[in-house]
Image (cartoon, rainbow, N blue to C red; front, side, top):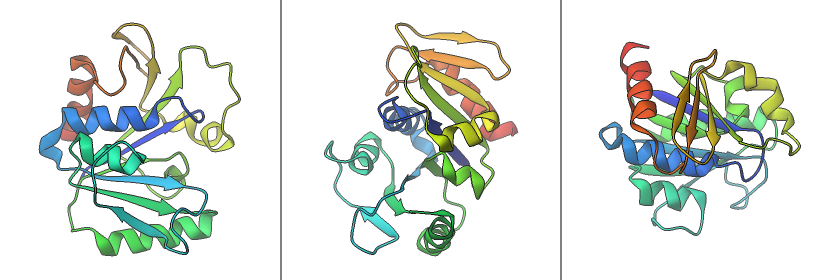
Length: 180
């Protein structure tokens, strides 16, 4: 089982686009893609499954990119996060490869790969959840004008299109998943 977490500094930095890029670049992983939201989306449900690919929601975008399953977890606080994750583990098959869009999930699990997305001009206010977990990043991904790689720590991948990751980034992720 592989676990990847994609987090970021705020709304609109490209977390969902990067998730789609990773899902599309690594189709053999047959990802179960999970978005974690702080606010309720579907009534009282902690875990909701998207079934229709498209572009109307982030979870629909994950399916359109090639995810085998796409789920939305609602977690208004840490206790709800734990309940939602407990429910998730019961709903997915053992050994499934998971990719999460969340900062806060890092308080509950340790992924094989943790990527943090930031804009090239990060002058916007950062989420508190980002500031609490940014130090856990294995790599930083920047939405930029061209594809580039810069040695770290942590390493930085600049991508012209987050939904189409570079070959360097694809190789780097594969290496982390295979050799840990």
